[in-house]
Amino acid sequence: MRVIVVGGGVVGTMHAWQAVQRGHEVVQIEREAEARGASLRNFGQIWVSGRAGGEELDTALRARELWERIGAEVPGLGFRANGSLTPVRTDREYAVAEAALARPDAAARGYKLVTAEEARQINPALRGDFAAALWCERDAAVEPRTAQLHLREALKATGRYTFLPGREVREVIAPGAVRDDHGDVHRGDAVVLATGAWLSGLVRELVPDLPVRRVRLQMMQTAPLGETLTTSVADADSFRYYPAYTSPALDALNAGQDQEPVAAAHKMQLLMVQRQDGGLTIGDTHEYEHPFAFDTLEDPYEHLTGVVEGFLGRPLPRIQRRWAGVYAQCTDTTRVVHRQQVADGVWLVTGPGGRGMTCSPAIAETTANELGW
Image 1 (cartoon, rainbow, N blue to C red):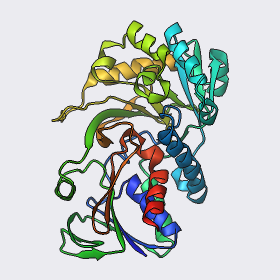
Image 2 (cartoon, rainbow, N blue to C red):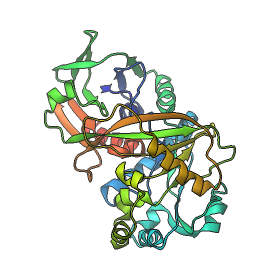
Image 3 (cartoon, rainbow, N blue to C red):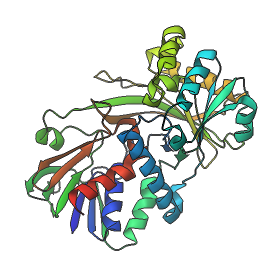
Image 4 (tube, rainbow, N blue to C red):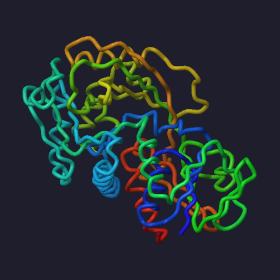
């Protein structure tokens, strides 16, 4: 079988990986010289802890298993089973963490409520002031800026993979066949459009009423911390954002403990993970209304800096990079991904939202199974 994958991000690359692993030939086409979207502009977190139960959690857990397996084959991914800690400071935050432990799927997530001292034993860099922390053993991380590069090198080594950058696919011309903006035609037994947040052009022509929206966020990265941050770190505002924490205790938190004004205005949470060079990737904000701003705002960065310094008990290293990114999210946020046959032999796979990096291996595996690869 010959598979054409359109899109060089992590979802597209994982589809290429699945096809090659099953013995097929793959041509992957990317409109930029390299992928430049959400696949590179994220935390690199394999984030199991906050996922909704049912299909979403099953997908995340399967993806976590696949990431670890692929990481053993491709060491350059930088896969590490680092887990996560969410420090809590107030009684209401503690109650939400405690309610999470009562979930029937808590053991599958690796939840444990630990004291502040126990949290510092797990992650000695957390020297700041907090009362306890929710530990999630199943969370993990990879290096987002380089993951696709290392995956592609491993794919090329099989002899059944070709990467064609700098080409935008413009037209479906026949079953399993597309034409790019160079005028070249690419034919296969199946075409997968994994175009991320690029929802205009060909995608709009094929699916005018696509139930997917775009979301914008801001993030930053610091100079090396100078010590190891042994886990990913979130703050209690993440309880408000992730569906796993839905409970009467969360209702009480939302009703009785307001977010900081900046955090509320920008729909913020803290997520933080350490990169292999020692720097910290920190975010994030959420913007849903179009048109998006073209600039980045300083207030969210100042808020995040204060939260991080409160947990670390020390000044944040110098910020080296600030950026914004856009990802695609199903308008029905309970859906893990939008997967649709849009023409003979052509499927669109998009809209995983903030789950893209976490769930992409399992999303691609499901596509491969459904298409009979």
